[in-house]
Figure 1 (spheres, rainbow, N blue to C red):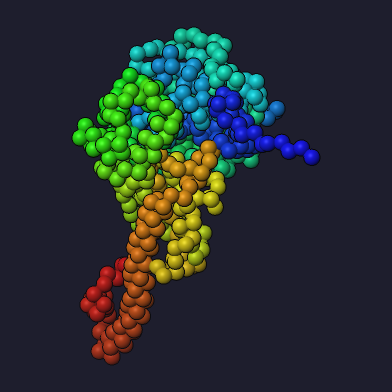
Figure 2: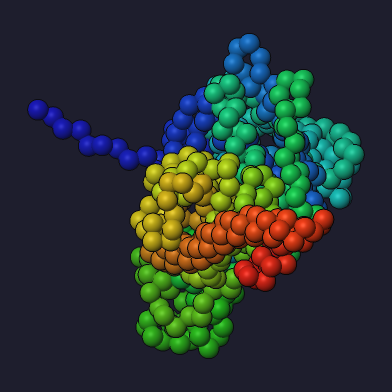
Length: 505
């Protein structure tokens, strides 16, 4: 009996484009329904990032056309910064082209998600991608592209100068999909997107009808996040390999000083001396074993300062609470935030809004809405660490019971979100994030308990006040009748003085 060894597919045996297409299910393109949602999501994410790079109030227009053969034509317009014309083929037609080794909170990157949508459309409909983009330095450029899957290279079918009235990008992708089944999930995604990005306005057109407008709840553009070098504790082998290729002629000492944050000449010298490494070694001559040793040492050394958190952009209390209240009928809202904290050299902040209101189901645990870097997460909630922490929290001790409709909106922002799969729908179990989430939920629970107790006490006082007011009015009417008075005196001041509360409460 013969035994065949299982073959593991890696980037070394096939191109990145072919690898991700073969594994399209884990990237969110496993079926026609999910493909529609994932395509819109990836295009909207990049559009919102582009608008923030341009420091403009995002205006995103989505147009979806569905023909009789299940071909879905998805067009997404934005008023962002645009893509330089010479960068368009690689930005959209090469997997991982957009990966940048700097720390900055981003929804998505040109390089994986959008290219995955292009690959899916190319394989299922044999249709090219159409990109029309304008930067401040150009009048506008239109490209029609395909992807060479085997060589991970763009194929330019057509390119021409085409004037565009304003800066930004319009991307058109044709895929095989099920729009009818994806519709509800798509609407949920857009509704939640303007909660996490309250300064954005998104419109959706399906066929000849404008289905809905979403946002804008704020005209305040968030302060631009500051791109920073990666923290040394965030260095993995792939990052080190690429950085050393880029800086191959530098010594190890200069390479560390120039490539990472929080590590100056003194800290670098101390680190290399402690790890018994040659500071004069040329990094381009380092072997894979040398890089492995360097990466392990960087991640384990505890002499580095905490990573810079200026590269993060949380939603903020005022904007988060306002956007939740604008999309849902809420009665009470509470906001809390934890951080900035760190996991493996990556700074992160967790913020949340706990809201009560009739739009939420009644349960002994809150309804959970998850966000990562301002992106709503709609799939795989059971695998998410936030879901598990929420279920472990003893909400009954905070006066939450099945009669109270409560929802929990949680946003995690970081330079690197530890997603469980390429589909980016659930956050993996990271002890630092798990601990901060647990403390955050308990803090919100205490706020809920305090407010619930206050509301219940107020309700009891109002009930007593009404009962006394009714009795007082009867006594006064009876007394006025005995005294043969024409006008019955008011009892309102007596009730207020007795309870020292506002009768209009």
